[in-house]
Length: 218
Image (cartoon, rainbow, N blue to C red; front, top):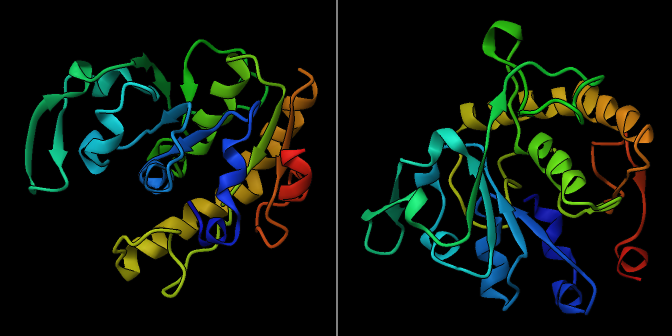
């Protein structure tokens, strides 16, 4: 959901044969552009994400099982939506673990989303995303908007307020993705014939090979 997504012609994602997975509130931007993601996932509290995602039956949603009975928020009327996660269409649950280990990342029965605070913290939906796509059968993944460089003038590709402490917290997690999770997943992916590409040449996440957006679409 980095700002670099705004530099791309997202209409290319409508082409036949292109499948998309969106994370967090980034899916609302795609929906506004007439693009319905095939898949969507999250790791945080479900009330943080807009109802346009939850209510759309065309989006296959993957959420933590621990969130299934949690309430949702109406981002338009600014009140409780009166619906829980398990009441939404096309939702599947997954179980999480909070101890990253690259040697078992792709084969363990649960989905790692980073580390518990006792192990240094640093949780991210990216870890769920990579494994999820692998289990769905994809062997080539092209990442868009994975900038991992948040600052006051560049937070997300959509408007969402972030305090200075929140920005610092994000960048702390980004550092762990850049230095530990990304390289670990890249090494593990080689054993399974999975290739992950980054389509942002300015991304801080350099563990994965770069490919241009145009070439990825081809």
